[in-house]
Image (cartoon, rainbow, N blue to C red; front, side):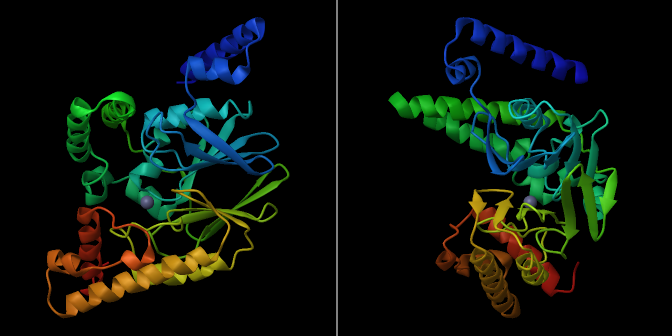
Amino acid sequence: MLAKRLLLMGLMALALIVACATAPPEEETTSAAKPATHTFEEVAPGVYFAQGTGEVNVGSNSMVVVNDEDVLVVDSHITPDAARELVVAITRITDKPIKTLVNTHFHYDHANGNQVFGDGIEIIGHEYTRQKLLTDVLSEPTYVLQGSVEALTPRLEAMEAQLAAAEGDARTDLEKSVAVMRRHISAQSEVVLTAPQRTLTDSLTLEKGSRTIELHFLGRGHTAGDVVIYMPAEKVIYTGDLFYDGAPYLADGFPLEFIETLDKLKEFDAELILGGHGGVTRDKLRIDARQEYLRDFWAQAKTSHDAGLSSADAFAKLDLEKHGFGSGRPAIRQLEIERMYHLMDGGE
Ligand SMILES: [Zn+2]
């Protein structure tokens, strides 16, 4: 793999030499050769919020922290294919070596690229994340219903049917989407679950040259092992799926504890919140909005549960529109209600 990476870096260096020799604008040459897979927003000196451009399905955001001597990456994307693109894209912002990968949690869209980070790169996560990634999480509903080939194939077929009827610009856009989806589906076969070697159950502070990077577990929420990455000097916190500005996924979660865990998140002196999905959040009041959503969802599920309604009937009655997070996919919301019923019945 190292050889492949060196070869890629060599090819990129060669492309740069060619670009300099013919002297067109660098961006033009780069995009003509291969469109950028990522954008890197420098939110503090050497701290980059990485988002996919849609050229490849990355599944979730990432953070890249360039330290005095090395690089720390947070989350590895949804496939090894996407993770490799991230590693190549990082060479656009630094030539320092990646030494550390942190997993915010075990979900496939954040950790299925882990295997690409080998060769002396330490993977760090919560002990729960390690235990989950040592079991067959790809057989659990979270992956089977959303990320698996079985789940993705009907979506591809629907896109192909749309493509067959499309014309003009819509056709060009759909052709690209279909190509990205085909590549994403074929990338699933390559996934080898790779667990963090180094774990924490409470907190862990990494001193990386002049930079301090703190990892904290604040309590159960989105999963039983969410880790946030806090840089006190930069006042930046990366929250994974514990917080982003949208509806949280709850089928592996603990909604009531989640509300308390988010209270702890508010205590951090952070000006920027980087979530696992969506953009940068600067307004801590958005955390209140997520807590309100959790309270409301739980209360509605509890009413249906106490009335003896099935999860399907509870879903039919569910109304979360006022939160403005969109309605989401019915199968997922019903799975979340089943999770809440399980907890209400005393399950773990
Ligand atoms: Zn997640």
